[in-house]
Structure formats: C-alpha cells, structure tokens
Image (cartoon, rainbow, N blue to C red; front, side, top):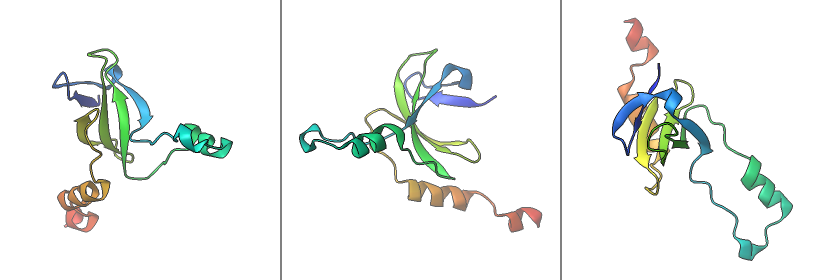
Length: 111
C-alpha cells in the first residue's frame, strides 16, 4: 500500500484517503487580456504529462480535507517532496539531480 504524508496532519496515511487534483501551479489567463477560446482550451484541458517529476495538487479527502502540493515521480510513483498549499514550487531540475545522485545506476547495482 502506498503511504502519503499529509503536511497538515503530519502523518503517513494510506493512498485511499487522498485524491489527485491534477497539475499544480497552473496560471489562470488574465480576464483583462480577453483570452481567446484557444487560450481557455489550453488552460482547461492541456496538461503536461512528463516521464519523471511533476508537481501535483492533492487533497486529503478522508482526513483534514485540505489541499497540498506534492512532487511525484510518474514512473516510480514515489513522492519526492510534499509541501503546503501556497508555498513556492520547488525546482524540479534540482530535485531530479538529487534523486539521480541518490539512486544507484544499473551498472552499480549489477556489480
């Protein structure tokens, strides 16, 4: 079972208590700019789908019911960083470099 740490409850809880609410830190189009239909379409429906790290918005539905953000690796499903709503987005490239440095390569694992 996958355990996810809620930054508000400060507990590791089963994944069944949480809901993924999609990609985090998406900028809404400014109404003053009178956005076109294509701009709204991009905002509402277009999301990145990277192989690797992604910042996502999560909700602890069956706990405190609060929203928080998490950086998750899409291949391994590992949560790399969890942070409260409103905190700045971490540098994904720096986190990926730290993760790569901490993970042994295939050649090292075979030796």
